[in-house]
Length: 317
Length: 206
Picture (cartoon, chains in turn cyan, blue):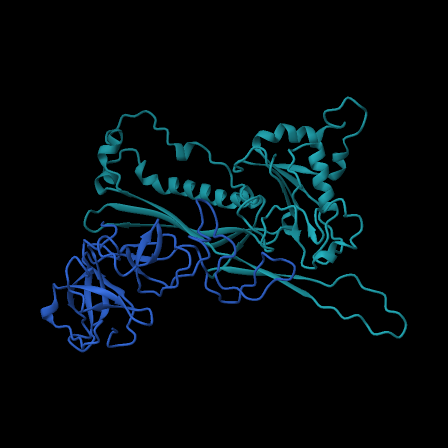
């Protein structure tokens, strides 16, 4: 495909008072995924990550009896493979030469916008598809009501106070058993699941959600839920107990559904990753025979949830 | 019957008529494929599988440039638009992960599996090379007199394909036309030759 003068007749003569160039004048949103994803760079075809669980609760050693021996548990491996994204445009020598407004010369800027959009979508689809196809290191979907713990069924048997949180022995949820809309009750449920968090051997660990991640249409509801001094939607004098959770909210313009909502710990406590293999690389060249100018942008990247810890999601309902 | 040689060198691209990079594509791979690089392949329901060896009319999509991945399902792991390579990203795992039945151990250096496979397309531009042999076991020495003749392809016992000088019935068992002697081998026994797939054999003509 080539861009030729016949397609851009208005650029061939001076006299246009104004040319509205969308990719220059319509401000593209700032990149949103870096605020959520841990951005890393690799120099190989793929990246593998492992997980280990520690040891379980320490038992009593009665007098003059031998010690109880245990072992660490090696978990699974997760692999992320950057993919290549690229696009090019070719403009005829004559079009490039005769363009009176320098529009054709700005093709690389348009390609850069396309690149940024794809970056965003690849990253956010980790979350969009986290209920279905995107899996965590444990082999189940990123948002799952029953993430299997490496310690097995006994891992949750001695964890204090989580019997009402979990749905099955030896598992821990980062999704409600029945999906729930963004609501006062939903946020309470979410914070409880974070509060009860245990490690692979069932030892309590600290994970505090920092932000609720929502579709932009839910920002008004989020403000009410997280900002009202009184309990939202009631006429009683109860305080808004969610205020004590110190939660903020974050809007994504790349969430595909309006109902799903998510909660995230600080970046350093979760494992959503955006992995660069090759940052955007622009290139251009002339075709010897036609003298047409070819311009391209190519990059390599992927996104991956190497672990489900520190993130939470509800798919609606 | 069997070829004279037990094994043969894989089919490869050597050049194109337009002196450009050969046209390659990466369609999704069909499940359970175990063929080697250099295998003629065909599209079956949109997925790449080893050529069946018998469909000579519009039967060959191209030649695989890598070994098949023995996928568990058609196109397993292939990314969708704005997606990522599906878990686990390889077909090589070992052992088991305790208490996590869906998790996997991936050995260091396990080949990545992206759900698709690189194929050099059989078209009117790309010139391939392959070794010659004869399914009857007869000696085979290509000469310049063979240029322009159509031949078929046969797979040996080790899974590699050769230009079969026993297959010369046009329209019945031929899929390629010899375009020249190999610049190194020339006219030696079981020499490699240069060839193009015939238009009739191409599954997609571009």
